[in-house]
Image 1 (cartoon, chains in turn yellow, orange):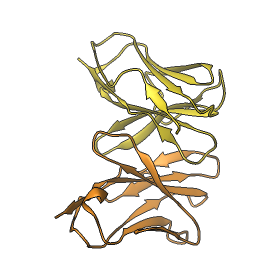
Image 2 (image 1 turned 120 degrees about the horizontal axis):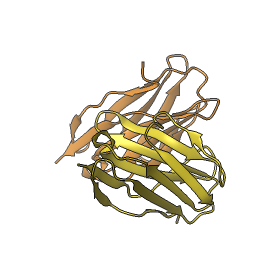
Image 3 (image 1 turned 30 degrees about the vertical axis):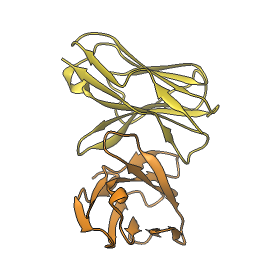
Amino acid sequence: DVKVTQSSRYLVKRTGEKVFLECVQDMDHENMFWYRQDPGLGLRLIYFSYDVKMKEKGDIPEGYSVSREKKERFSLILESASTNQTSMYLCASSPEYNEQFFGPGTRLTVL
Amino acid sequence: RKEVEQDPGPFNVPEGATVAFNCTYSNSASQSFFWYRQDCRKEPKLLMSVYSSGNEDGRFTAQLNRASQYISLLIRDSKLSDSATYLCVVISNDYKLSFGAGTTVTVRA
């Protein structure tokens, strides 16, 4: 079974803090994605990566950056967390542009 | 206009009933379509792909209407375990992936 893991299930940070969200997949997938999910808005793509050291902006990249130094790991960075970044963050991986396998999510609260 | 739109529901149905709902998309060049299921406080998981000719998987039937730019999901003989939020996913011809906000289905005993 494909396994996608995320470093934390719940995280509470203060405004202005730097936040790292880590995602690891064990199926050698090329593509990895970061989404945030908010009520009524669904999943919105923040960034994605189709190869090591490659990254592409999604629909809402502002306030975020990413890092993919190894194929299995894709990190989302909030340089200076703000309250409007309180959300559920979901990481996903996929071998091609078809089925995506999601991690369990990280619920981030920024106070 | 959102690229992918779904009726949020909720659709409250008794066990054994049939429930159906649609997902409309704005990009006529979209090439791939999927339905995902998301249980409360869980991650989305693929339910089924949607093929041009329509497809069935047990009690679930998915259809694509390219002329009217929507996909549909029909659930027959609803079970309590079908209660979830159903997300549609559309991939455009330039591989842009868009999720709908989800349709909530609640099956009651």
